[in-house]
Image (cartoon, rainbow, N blue to C red; front, side, top):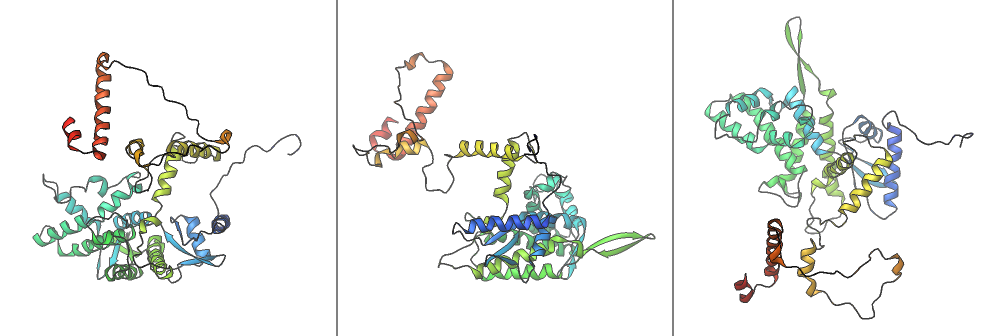
Length: 399
């Protein structure tokens, strides 16, 4: 209180600085550590404040970690962000890769030639080749450019002569980036692609990560500029943050595997270290306030409360809880009946207030057409659930 005026609201006019970010990160990690949880990985994008923080912590390819209260925390840059940054620079510059140089024009030539009815790469569209500002934010467009399908079909074009042999460097780079993203985006439910399976530190997995680590160490980013009417090649590698981001992330995950205690069947799903989940969460918060990019703390609190209570009982795929009410109804016979002397402790504080459900008599012959359709749909659904549990011959004949 200052005089008769009370401090009501504080507005922040700039982003979080490096020192304030460091204090916040250390405070959050310290509080979580007090709950006996072990923090092993910190993931961030490559914003200037996070890049400054990583440099302050002396995070590098050789030392991709820092310490909080004596515990080692591995630093990882968000892989989807790195993939988008790589795509942007691949489109804008020429990248030295192995013994050649990548060029976007080979991808463009392939796309223009692949415009028939039966396309070789049907997912590749004009949006992938020339993405706008909003399309550049979507990971799927970058992932579909760096895909095995694009690399394989471009290789076919080289073999038949529709693309020159000099395109093979670009093709190999696309294929290697596809495998790298599969490795660092691995999930439990993987598809047919070998590198998209959970990380087990197999020879092929580790070999490709170490290979890409060397690729990024030796990569040069080249730009062209007109000087006195002549085209001059300029090395802009020092300005590229994505190279250091890939190197730190790969080294960090390899060292993380060596650092953690593993059981015989232990695997790592690197998808868990991405920011997709939290970005989707905050995207929902922003949509609750009319697509408000920077909601105030009170708006964030209201949105969080609303979303939490609406989705509290929502089934999560892979969880060990019952999926929905239909599953509860079909398994109710397996639940032991309550004890006669059971009672609710502190009934005034019980969160549930049950009451008897009163169902009146209805003449279903008098229903209108929409109600009849609804009745048929619901009855069919209940019969299907019933048959799943009671599939005797009599029941099947009745159905």
